[in-house]
Image: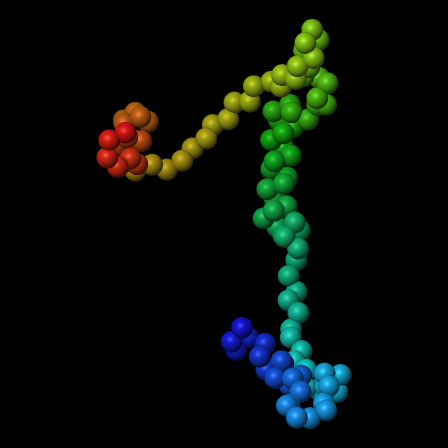
Length: 113
């Protein structure tokens, strides 16, 4: 592993021809590394805000009911209500006014389809 951690291994490695063992390493020779004080990923501010927004969206769409609410009585099939969302994205200016098929065939495929 190159330089990373080699210093500690070299101090613990017994020299050839001697009767030293690994247990004779004094505590002062070991390297103490700083422990990072970082909050767990599920408790970070950005993740907590996203979780709150997701819960608000689920409640506003009415998807927080139990699965039995969305079952058809005659077949028992689960049919949740449709969800309508507005999704936005940025596109290149030359794509404006073109069909999706035109953009896909002219921009992303090489050669004959």
